[in-house]
Length: 134
Image 1: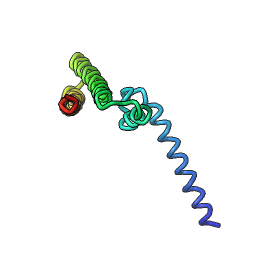
Image 2 (image 1 turned 45 degrees about the vertical axis):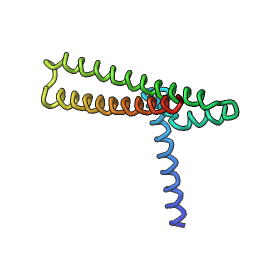
Image 3 (image 1 turned 30 degrees about the vertical axis):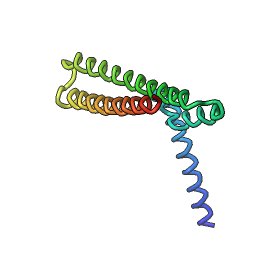
Image 4 (image 1 turned 60 degrees about the vertical axis):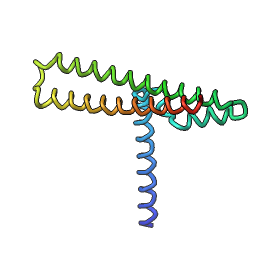
């Protein structure tokens, strides 16, 4: 009887945790760029839906368009981070620079560098796909 109660409690806590995760994903859905959350599934859906009708050129064009869309989304995120850095610098008189401003700007710079590396990687993929298509 005691083991059944424990098992019931465990399953309830798993259910509650899964609901909390779903709510968290739902709350943060607006923060993710539109195409990013789908990832490979979006590409697979395109390929499955039109697999009979796709030629090699159209498939490569479709891939490059998806990659360009991702680059555009990452560039928008970089622009917002740049604006955040400017607003942080504008309010330095109100904040303690060493405690709050400097770490916030460093976090922005780190995210910008990572996004720029992602953009460079995606651009290399696009150039590789275009070389294959020619």
